[in-house]
Structures are given as C-alpha cells and as structure tokens.
Length: 442
Image 1 (spheres, rainbow, N blue to C red):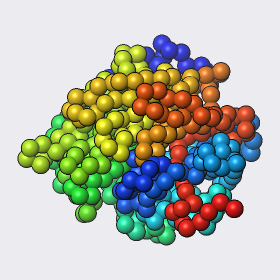
Image 2: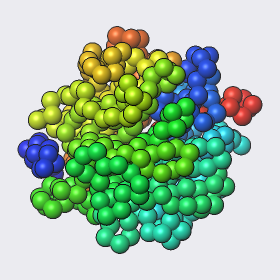
Image 3: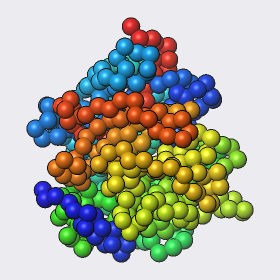
Image 4: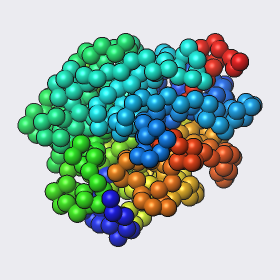
C-alpha cells in the first residue's frame, strides 16, 4: 500500500464535505460505558486491549491483551495476559454484558463475535464462545461494531450488509448467553420505519449506540460500509464514488421498543456518542470525523430532541480527523482524540451549547481511542484506527499509553510498544477490576 501524504489527507476532507475512579456512585468504570453495567468504585486493575493482528508481527492473530494498570501492583505497566482468537478479523470494538462477567468483541471483516469470561480470573480472560453465524442470523448484517449492554441483553451495531457491502445496516439484539433475538434495521428513505426525517438524509448507516434510560432515549450514529472500511486508504481517497459512501445521520430511537423516532442530519460521519451523566442534563455529544465538528444532541424546552454543531475540533481544513471522545463523570469536560495529528484536546462543556477548548497535547504520530477513569485522574490511549487506514512507515506507531491528569497537564506514566512486544495494532480498551467479582490478586 502506498504512503498517505498530508495532501491526500486534506483531499479526504475536501471530498467528504461533499467522517478509579474514587468511591463515587459511578455506573461504570469508563464514562462512555452503559449505565446498566456493574460499577467499579476504586482503582482499575486492568485495561483489556482488543488488538488487531498484523502480518509479520508475532502470531499475526487478533488478540485480547491484558495490561496491569494498578500502581500498587508489582506488574504495573506490564502485559500480564494475551489471548489470541485465530486469524485476522479486523478487531475493532468490545464491551461487557450488564453484569460485567463477559466481554464481547467483534471482527469487522469476518463478522465473528468473540466472548471472553473475565469474571473467573480478571487477570487472564478466557475465550469461551465464538458466534460465527452473525450474518445469517441477523438477516444479512455485516461488521459487528459497538456492543452495548441493556438488562440481560447485548445490542450490537452493524456497519454494513451482505447484499452490496454498503452502509445500509441495522442494530442486532442478542441475549447475554449469545442467543440471537432480533434485528432492528435502520430507517431509510425507502422505509422510514415510522421515523420522522428532519433534514436531507435517511441513509440507513450505523456506527455507535448509546442510551439515556431515564429519558427512554437511544441514539445511533453513522460511518461507512465494508467496501470502504476494508479498502486500501489510498485507493479509497482516489475513488470519488467511495468518498460519497459515508453516513450523515444520527437516529433517535425509543429505547424500550427499539423503534426509530427521528433522523437528524449530522454531516461527515458522526462516530462515537457520549451521553451526560447528571440527571438534570438531557444531552449527548458526538463528533463528525470528516468535518471535524462537535455535535450536541439535546432536549429542547418542549422535551423534543434536536441536533446542532457546537464547536470545531482543531482546524477542519487541516483534517485532524476526530475519532474518539470521552466525557467526564461530572459533565464538565470532554476529551477528543484526532488521528491525523496525533493529538488529544480537552473541551470545557460546562455550557454544553458552547464548548471551549482549554487544552491540547500530542500523544503520538497517530492516536485513536481515549479512555478515562471515573475520577478523571487517569487516561489511556491506543493507536490503531483500521488496518488499512493506519499511517505508513515510521508514523505507524502502535502503542498503549497511560497518563496521569492533574487538571492542568498530562504526564505519561508508561507506554507499551505493541509492535516491539509482538502484539499487533492496539485498538480499543475496556477496564477490569478484581473487586467486581470479590476476587483479589494472588
């Protein structure tokens, strides 16, 4: 694959405009996790890193890597376990069931879902089940992406379909035991499924899913289909038709019935969704990757949900490419990582309708995911976006990094070079703790 120049990245944007915790009563370890999940009320012991296998690196397989992150541990800053799953599946996202006993992780290319037991031995998760019939059971959904816990069930967002490998797709519902239940197809112009189209788009695309249970609200965002996310990046940039195949919508759903209600125009591939935690804050954020905008999905004075862009993330013309966001547990701040320039930015969201950037720092030549502890004192970063989209040559750093945040500056505590350790490409993180299961380190 050819190297990707800054000029090509700029062309990407132009074409697209046409992508702990103290003992607080937290509902989860990460502030982006489902509020239905069991909580961690102290220091996290582990970070589980869902990792893409890389050709010529170690066993070349996707794997779940366990990193010890408790400063009191003798193994602090070290990889303590690694479970390979067989082959390269385009490992991407993962998450826990509501009881946090099992971690579900997906492969965007092979459509396999890997289920790990993390409760029996939190330091060494065990692969206990592989769902291989996701496409057939779901009725043609391709690319299991986000996993979201609701009571007794897992909601799985798809990115594509097996008819045209484009972006039209669905949300797929499973029991915690891994039994398929039903498929909820995204609304489109051809079938709005009872939803109200509020703007220009009803594209049927999907990406992330988050909920505000007290408001009976579920939101889904949008990205692109298999034909794009598995394509060589340089080839995609040079294909005008491919550059048109990105989502431009956020959909509001009735959480309980799983019925779509409204479709909002959010141009430029809105990716991760993060919702406020305070009971008097009725809003969620998302960031559009291709237009570098921070968007607010909020309830208005009539308790109707609306969407508006509220801030730029970096300089949109320079294509920072925001890829992940993390909201603080007190709803005061929001972290945003930008893949192209390798930076993390902090926004003051005390006024959610008028966020202000207050800090930025370079993490690496590229950066993807950011995960924050509930107390906001620890942040973790990973490097890989997609196997065919990561930078080339010396800029293709693959790492897991841990930082301390004192309210003014980020200080690196340790870093693990995933290539040097022959692990692959570090993508997404989830937290673990002995205390969740009444267990303690041996």
